[in-house]
Length: 564
Ligand SMILES: Nc1nc2c(ncn2[C@@H]2O[C@H](COP(=O)(O)OP(=O)(O)O)[C@@H](O)[C@H]2O)c(=O)[nH]1
Ligand SMILES: [Mg+2]
Image (cartoon, rainbow, N blue to C red; front, top):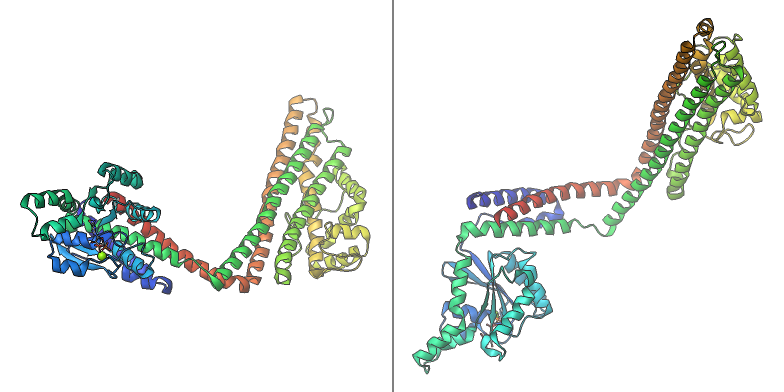
């Protein structure tokens, strides 16, 4: 990538950032810090603690006369604002001392660093302390100045310690950056003194100048700024763009009332999602259990096919019938109670605001066709007998009433009333205690649901009849009974048929269960919306903004990597 293109891309990203940051009052004021086209000379900022000799270094580099140095250099921390000095085609920016315990000065120094293209990090032969070292490493690392900095160790003549020992200590503190950043020992005052002391011999003067390190510093500054404005500034701007975007991210940290609202919403969403997941888990598990029971029952029927007459013995057909009814009834009970448990959990948190789920009516395979009047084929008799055996769930009465129920809500309502007056009837209506609270008492979700339930239960029995029907058709086998292969085929046909019914049942239970659940969840969300709307709005605005900010930041980081 050429530098010119890097420049254009940084500015394009900055323009995009401007739009995104302008879009919300939280971030609007940050747009002022975004990089803009800037062809002014490179800025080298002097960063270091107060009294390290930053001003003296500038005086030395600028070869200022003694009178002017007086104004610049002081033992007190007097540099308060960034001060620019043109030097060799670049601008040296003298920053107020950092780490002076003065927040205003630190803030001004921070602004100066952020606006700089390169840094002259100034420390002294007294060695930087912990806080200063940390500030240096932040500039090199987080701020990305590692390849655009020199570290100046000033006041070298002031200490008696060995020069190499001091420089080694500095390098240790620079850690991984010791090899990347030039370290220049200087003594700015020696240099200035050499220029201003009329008593010095020429020889002595030259020696002082050479040992002051200022010429070496000049050479190093020229070297790092050699890429010029075009080569260097886009990198500095890309880094600054990243910092502004980081600031923007921070502006989106919610607090106070907004944070509360967002938390309330998140909590409600999580509760609803937990409720939903728990029911879905049950749905998946129980529909598979029902399917597996249907398959197993089918295998049992298949295994029982008689080699003599190709028929399924009546007692086995009876068992299978009961098993099919039980499989679906158990599903209903467990699914209903999982919805009820989810409801109870939400009520515990949100009280009456949570709407009651409708009673689960398992109308999978609801009766559409009329049920043939019971002609006493062995299998229909088996079903009737199974129903009679199942007194405890009232299936007998139900079986007798199926015909009346199909397509006749009024009849169903009467039946619902009637069933509810008997213990057995309550069990049919209400295996999980979902509809009635005891004899003759309907729960608030009421009679209509009970009526649906009667129709649903009738449908269940009809479904069983449909699944069982191939067992009823045994005649063709009887004729072929001598053929073992035919028996085998017949058994396989039973297995396939039941496997098929199991699969379809599973899919249907899952689908209708999901619909039932989704409808209720939508009602719950609707009812809790007054509680969650505000937080949802805030979170949505935040997410949108952060998404934009982060994607720009990614882009800017790519540019930085490409540029370095
Ligand atoms: N011995 C010695 N003293 C210095 C040197 N540079 C600056 N000083 C002294 O340190 C004090 C602070 O210098 P100044 O340039 O104002 O530091 P600044 O706060 O970083 O700008 C002054 O008294 C200077 O005379 C140096 O290279 N050697
Ligand atoms: Mg100063």
